[in-house]
Image (cartoon, rainbow, N blue to C red):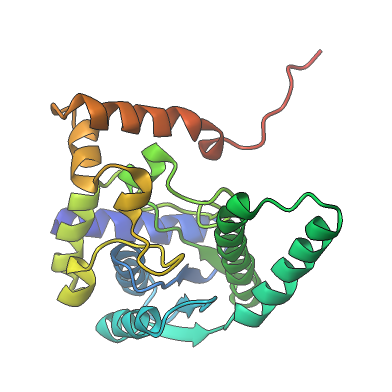
Length: 246
Protein backbone atom coordinates (compact mmCIF):
# COMPACT_ATOMS: atom_id res chain seq x y z
CA UNK A 1 0.00 0.00 0.00
CA UNK A 2 2.88 2.35 0.75
CA UNK A 3 4.19 1.72 -2.77
CA UNK A 4 0.78 2.42 -4.33
CA UNK A 5 0.39 5.66 -2.40
CA UNK A 6 3.93 6.77 -3.30
CA UNK A 7 3.31 6.10 -6.99
CA UNK A 8 -0.02 7.96 -6.98
CA UNK A 9 1.50 10.96 -5.19
CA UNK A 10 4.36 11.07 -7.71
CA UNK A 11 1.89 10.74 -10.60
CA UNK A 12 -0.19 13.64 -9.29
CA UNK A 13 2.93 15.78 -9.00
CA UNK A 14 4.01 14.88 -12.55
CA UNK A 15 0.61 15.69 -14.05
CA UNK A 16 0.40 19.08 -12.37
CA UNK A 17 3.96 19.87 -13.49
CA UNK A 18 3.13 18.81 -17.08
CA UNK A 19 0.15 21.19 -17.02
CA UNK A 20 2.37 24.03 -15.78
CA UNK A 21 0.10 24.56 -12.79
CA UNK A 22 0.58 24.89 -9.04
CA UNK A 23 -1.37 22.17 -7.25
CA UNK A 24 -4.66 20.32 -6.96
CA UNK A 25 -8.22 20.67 -5.69
CA UNK A 26 -10.89 18.12 -4.78
CA UNK A 27 -14.53 18.37 -3.79
CA UNK A 28 -14.84 16.90 -0.29
CA UNK A 29 -18.21 15.25 0.30
CA UNK A 30 -17.51 13.33 3.48
CA UNK A 31 -17.37 10.03 1.59
CA UNK A 32 -14.45 7.64 1.52
CA UNK A 33 -13.34 8.29 -2.07
CA UNK A 34 -13.03 12.06 -1.72
CA UNK A 35 -11.36 11.51 1.66
CA UNK A 36 -8.66 9.36 0.08
CA UNK A 37 -8.12 11.90 -2.72
CA UNK A 38 -7.88 14.74 -0.18
CA UNK A 39 -5.15 12.85 1.67
CA UNK A 40 -3.31 12.09 -1.58
CA UNK A 41 -3.26 15.66 -2.88
CA UNK A 42 -2.23 16.96 0.52
CA UNK A 43 0.77 14.61 0.39
CA UNK A 44 1.53 15.60 -3.19
CA UNK A 45 1.17 19.35 -2.63
CA UNK A 46 1.46 20.17 1.10
CA UNK A 47 1.15 23.92 0.48
CA UNK A 48 -0.83 23.91 -2.77
CA UNK A 49 -3.84 21.68 -2.24
CA UNK A 50 -7.42 22.53 -1.42
CA UNK A 51 -10.52 20.68 -0.29
CA UNK A 52 -13.75 22.36 -1.39
CA UNK A 53 -16.93 21.62 0.56
CA UNK A 54 -20.03 22.46 -1.47
CA UNK A 55 -23.31 21.97 0.40
CA UNK A 56 -26.29 21.80 -1.94
CA UNK A 57 -29.51 20.70 -0.27
CA UNK A 58 -27.18 18.58 1.85
CA UNK A 59 -27.64 17.20 5.35
CA UNK A 60 -25.73 18.48 8.36
CA UNK A 61 -24.22 15.02 8.74
CA UNK A 62 -22.59 15.35 5.32
CA UNK A 63 -21.00 18.66 6.33
CA UNK A 64 -19.78 17.21 9.62
CA UNK A 65 -18.24 14.24 7.80
CA UNK A 66 -16.54 16.53 5.28
CA UNK A 67 -14.97 18.59 8.08
CA UNK A 68 -13.84 15.37 9.73
CA UNK A 69 -11.99 14.51 6.52
CA UNK A 70 -10.44 17.97 6.38
CA UNK A 71 -9.19 17.65 9.96
CA UNK A 72 -7.75 14.19 9.33
CA UNK A 73 -5.39 15.37 6.59
CA UNK A 74 -5.00 19.04 7.63
CA UNK A 75 -5.66 20.22 4.07
CA UNK A 76 -6.62 23.84 3.40
CA UNK A 77 -10.32 24.15 2.66
CA UNK A 78 -13.15 26.44 1.63
CA UNK A 79 -16.93 26.15 1.85
CA UNK A 80 -19.16 27.38 -0.98
CA UNK A 81 -22.86 26.79 -0.31
CA UNK A 82 -24.67 26.13 -3.59
CA UNK A 83 -28.15 25.55 -2.18
CA UNK A 84 -29.58 28.91 -3.17
CA UNK A 85 -27.88 28.84 -6.58
CA UNK A 86 -29.36 25.44 -7.30
CA UNK A 87 -32.83 26.46 -6.15
CA UNK A 88 -32.86 29.53 -8.40
CA UNK A 89 -31.58 27.62 -11.40
CA UNK A 90 -33.67 24.48 -11.07
CA UNK A 91 -36.88 26.31 -10.18
CA UNK A 92 -36.48 28.40 -13.34
CA UNK A 93 -36.20 25.20 -15.38
CA UNK A 94 -39.14 23.63 -13.56
CA UNK A 95 -41.35 26.68 -14.04
CA UNK A 96 -40.64 26.85 -17.76
CA UNK A 97 -41.29 23.13 -18.30
CA UNK A 98 -44.52 23.27 -16.32
CA UNK A 99 -45.67 26.28 -18.30
CA UNK A 100 -45.09 24.35 -21.53
CA UNK A 101 -46.84 21.30 -20.08
CA UNK A 102 -43.73 19.11 -20.47
CA UNK A 103 -42.69 18.72 -16.82
CA UNK A 104 -41.76 15.09 -15.97
CA UNK A 105 -41.96 14.60 -12.20
CA UNK A 106 -40.25 11.22 -12.26
CA UNK A 107 -37.32 12.42 -14.38
CA UNK A 108 -36.98 15.59 -12.30
CA UNK A 109 -35.48 13.72 -9.34
CA UNK A 110 -32.51 12.59 -11.41
CA UNK A 111 -32.30 15.94 -13.17
CA UNK A 112 -32.15 17.67 -9.79
CA UNK A 113 -29.32 15.39 -8.61
CA UNK A 114 -27.32 15.74 -11.83
CA UNK A 115 -27.70 19.52 -11.76
CA UNK A 116 -26.20 19.58 -8.27
CA UNK A 117 -23.23 17.50 -9.43
CA UNK A 118 -22.64 19.80 -12.40
CA UNK A 119 -22.93 22.93 -10.28
CA UNK A 120 -20.30 21.49 -7.95
CA UNK A 121 -17.95 20.80 -10.85
CA UNK A 122 -18.49 24.31 -12.25
CA UNK A 123 -17.60 25.67 -8.82
CA UNK A 124 -14.52 23.46 -8.54
CA UNK A 125 -13.18 24.74 -11.85
CA UNK A 126 -13.88 28.38 -10.96
CA UNK A 127 -11.90 28.01 -7.73
CA UNK A 128 -9.21 25.92 -9.45
CA UNK A 129 -8.71 28.68 -12.02
CA UNK A 130 -8.17 31.15 -9.21
CA UNK A 131 -5.30 29.13 -7.71
CA UNK A 132 -3.91 27.50 -10.81
CA UNK A 133 -4.89 23.98 -9.71
CA UNK A 134 -5.99 20.84 -11.52
CA UNK A 135 -9.35 19.34 -10.53
CA UNK A 136 -8.95 15.83 -9.14
CA UNK A 137 -11.85 13.37 -9.37
CA UNK A 138 -12.90 10.69 -6.91
CA UNK A 139 -14.35 7.89 -9.07
CA UNK A 140 -13.08 4.40 -8.28
CA UNK A 141 -13.00 1.39 -10.65
CA UNK A 142 -16.47 0.18 -9.64
CA UNK A 143 -18.09 3.57 -10.24
CA UNK A 144 -16.22 4.10 -13.50
CA UNK A 145 -17.15 0.68 -14.88
CA UNK A 146 -20.85 0.94 -14.01
CA UNK A 147 -21.19 4.62 -14.89
CA UNK A 148 -22.17 5.54 -11.35
CA UNK A 149 -21.22 9.18 -11.77
CA UNK A 150 -22.69 12.25 -13.43
CA UNK A 151 -21.46 13.03 -16.92
CA UNK A 152 -19.80 16.47 -16.83
CA UNK A 153 -20.47 16.46 -13.08
CA UNK A 154 -18.27 14.43 -10.77
CA UNK A 155 -17.04 12.71 -13.95
CA UNK A 156 -15.87 16.03 -15.45
CA UNK A 157 -12.39 16.33 -13.98
CA UNK A 158 -8.72 16.55 -14.96
CA UNK A 159 -7.33 13.55 -13.09
CA UNK A 160 -8.83 10.28 -11.80
CA UNK A 161 -6.24 8.72 -9.46
CA UNK A 162 -8.57 6.05 -8.04
CA UNK A 163 -9.97 4.78 -11.34
CA UNK A 164 -8.01 1.50 -11.21
CA UNK A 165 -8.80 0.77 -7.55
CA UNK A 166 -11.76 -1.36 -6.48
CA UNK A 167 -13.91 -0.09 -3.63
CA UNK A 168 -12.20 -2.60 -1.36
CA UNK A 169 -8.77 -1.27 -2.36
CA UNK A 170 -9.95 2.28 -1.70
CA UNK A 171 -10.96 1.20 1.81
CA UNK A 172 -7.53 -0.33 2.40
CA UNK A 173 -5.84 2.83 1.17
CA UNK A 174 -8.09 4.91 3.40
CA UNK A 175 -6.97 2.93 6.44
CA UNK A 176 -3.32 3.36 5.48
CA UNK A 177 -3.71 7.11 4.95
CA UNK A 178 -5.47 7.70 8.27
CA UNK A 179 -8.97 8.46 7.04
CA UNK A 180 -11.32 8.43 10.08
CA UNK A 181 -12.98 5.07 10.70
CA UNK A 182 -16.42 6.71 10.75
CA UNK A 183 -15.87 7.67 7.09
CA UNK A 184 -14.53 4.25 6.11
CA UNK A 185 -17.40 2.27 7.61
CA UNK A 186 -20.44 4.36 6.68
CA UNK A 187 -22.62 3.15 3.78
CA UNK A 188 -21.54 4.82 0.50
CA UNK A 189 -24.03 7.51 -0.50
CA UNK A 190 -24.09 10.49 -2.83
CA UNK A 191 -26.45 12.21 -0.37
CA UNK A 192 -28.97 12.87 -3.12
CA UNK A 193 -32.03 12.34 -0.93
CA UNK A 194 -32.95 11.00 2.49
CA UNK A 195 -31.96 7.36 2.85
CA UNK A 196 -30.26 7.21 -0.55
CA UNK A 197 -27.34 4.78 -0.87
CA UNK A 198 -25.15 3.89 -3.84
CA UNK A 199 -25.85 0.17 -3.64
CA UNK A 200 -29.63 0.51 -3.45
CA UNK A 201 -29.57 2.74 -6.49
CA UNK A 202 -27.30 0.45 -8.51
CA UNK A 203 -29.16 -2.72 -7.58
CA UNK A 204 -26.00 -4.59 -6.64
CA UNK A 205 -23.16 -4.21 -4.13
CA UNK A 206 -19.62 -2.89 -4.36
CA UNK A 207 -18.44 -6.30 -3.18
CA UNK A 208 -20.06 -7.93 -6.20
CA UNK A 209 -18.71 -5.28 -8.58
CA UNK A 210 -15.21 -5.67 -7.14
CA UNK A 211 -15.37 -9.46 -7.59
CA UNK A 212 -16.62 -9.02 -11.16
CA UNK A 213 -13.75 -6.63 -11.99
CA UNK A 214 -11.26 -9.13 -10.57
CA UNK A 215 -12.69 -11.91 -12.73
CA UNK A 216 -14.24 -13.82 -9.83
CA UNK A 217 -17.51 -15.73 -9.98
CA UNK A 218 -20.63 -13.88 -8.85
CA UNK A 219 -24.37 -14.64 -9.05
CA UNK A 220 -25.83 -14.39 -12.55
CA UNK A 221 -28.30 -11.70 -11.46
CA UNK A 222 -25.51 -9.41 -10.24
CA UNK A 223 -23.42 -10.07 -13.35
CA UNK A 224 -26.33 -9.10 -15.59
CA UNK A 225 -26.92 -5.87 -13.63
CA UNK A 226 -23.23 -4.89 -13.80
CA UNK A 227 -22.97 -5.61 -17.53
CA UNK A 228 -26.20 -3.73 -18.23
CA UNK A 229 -24.97 -0.70 -16.25
CA UNK A 230 -21.63 -0.79 -18.09
CA UNK A 231 -23.23 -0.94 -21.54
CA UNK A 232 -25.78 1.74 -20.76
CA UNK A 233 -23.13 4.15 -19.44
CA UNK A 234 -20.54 3.74 -22.21
CA UNK A 235 -21.19 7.29 -23.41
CA UNK A 236 -20.09 8.64 -20.02
CA UNK A 237 -16.58 7.29 -20.49
CA UNK A 238 -16.13 8.97 -23.88
CA UNK A 239 -15.63 12.51 -25.04
CA UNK A 240 -18.44 13.93 -27.14
CA UNK A 241 -19.11 11.62 -30.08
CA UNK A 242 -18.25 12.91 -33.54
CA UNK A 243 -19.38 11.57 -36.92
CA UNK A 244 -16.85 9.95 -39.27
CA UNK A 245 -14.85 12.40 -41.35
CA UNK A 246 -16.44 12.45 -44.81
